[in-house]
Image 1 (cartoon, rainbow, N blue to C red):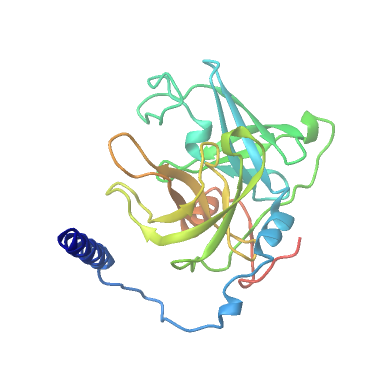
Image 2 (tube, rainbow, N blue to C red):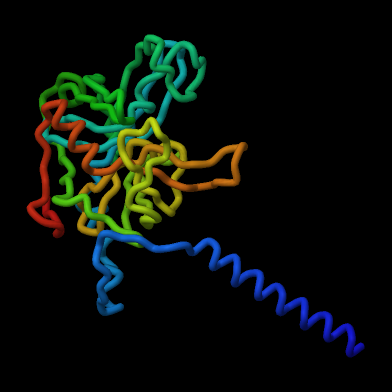
Length: 279
């Protein structure tokens, strides 16, 4: 009996040792360009951040419904960037190529299928839009809403405000308003796992890596900081049968979004500083 107890105790010690070593091997060396600082723990979480994001941006967030000439439909997310109805979304939400035969990623060598586009707001108002441009270097596209209710007059839309700085950091709390599984406009809390990682040698930007619930349909949704200002755009999550990865969200950074809008000659709102923006 004593021998069994001894073996059991030794086994427990070996397991504890193995777990500790595993933790060390994954920790590595921490590098940062941002000077560490100490803050009062009561200031770490802003209990009103989610409310700020929702209240300021609920009617800036949209569902994007694309119906292609092969009768297939894509449902994604988007957000208003100008009061006259320019909408940002992901390129893969609004383009489909004949060679794929499905909603799989596009083939840039083929001509895209023709499509009609609907922009759906939180109150379920649905408006027709036109695809006016997209980026070949980033997964971004620009739609323009036609006249309100397709001809009954014009309307002023509620645009988002882009953050003054793209400075986000490990552990920062972010939010997205999007259309997961085409359920409607849903608020999701996220955490920054990394402010920038280049996922492929072909990428021309470093993706924001996010820990949170990103589902099909969240693509194209704006990523907001706690002040309700845009700091990026959801475009993917990493998972697949060929790897053990699951649920790693990916965002296009603010600098890439601004470059896209500047190239499209679209004027957008920018916060004067990282504070709550009233609309």
